[in-house]
Image (tube, rainbow, N blue to C red; front, side):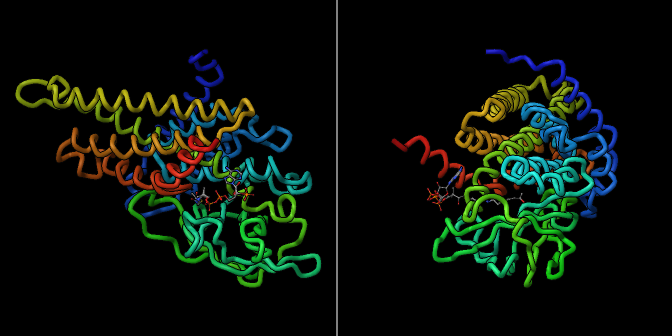
Length: 380
Ligand code: CAA
């Protein structure tokens, strides 16, 4: 068993860390405060290859492994989770699904542009009445000649306001329940596609989260991904990989809060010595460091299983569950270590605390992860 990162992994880590410190840190407080989409920063991320890291170079991707991707996600999430969620959705939910299950024609037409960031993608599964209970899709795609006619509303769509391409999950044969669900590649410019207002959120405020409305949208048959009825399975398989992305985001948020707390605790004095010399603070730091390391092991293990071509459904749910709970706990403690300063915007930890919360909710809540994990460990 080798726990060492390769030279290539270390280079990617440094590139992502430098990018986050030089390009994302300046302005991150203002973008959060004003809920300003990081358009310029996303363009730079695309130029550096962070939006299609794992895609085969023949489709313009970086051809990297999942470990490289989670390393980059961690570094970027230490500073700006509005950027890292956009990165995660494009890499794991859109590019991966398209590369794994799309036709050669679909890959040439869409993946080659999504991998470079020329296009940004969004994944449209959740609906007003189908969040955790994802089989209850109300959006319909009814066959009509060589097209499908798409109607419905999707909620909580990350990248919604900036996306060029939507992967839309819809019910084609309602009588077949989840076996009648399909997934379609939908262009944002097609008639009948409307991006509704951006949500006003607690955290990841600079990222786009929108409802998307589909009204009699004509989707060519060749834009369906996979065999008829493959859509729900596609969503589940893709989300398994997505959860590794969100787990690495949570890991980054926790690591960022820990690093800030460590530095602050050495500088800040109270009762005649740095607060790090007080056991009350030192023990908080010890717990943070230990739990973050445990989260990192789970995240890397899930990524490794995926790279090895093994089943990673259970590992990705465990990684997401644990890392997101660690992110929440660590950031709350980080604010406490910073005292009154931690409660202000300038010290970053209050933003990390707000950003941490969503990692326990999106791409499957902590409760959903416990369903997936308990079913796996209890199955015969
Ligand atoms: N891979 C392939 N197929 C899978 C699967 C997997 N990992 N997990 C389940 N399935 C299949 C099952 O085998 C079953 O198919 P068969 O009947 O053919 O065997 C089918 O899916 C239904 O499975 P279940 O009976 O287990 O369905 P369920 O309704 O009891 O529960 C669930 C399934 C795991 C709870 C699922 O609904 C789920 O994951 N819900 C959470 C959805 C979610 O994560 N939403 C996040 C939205 S996306 C988002 O947040 C993106 C963003 O923008 C950031």
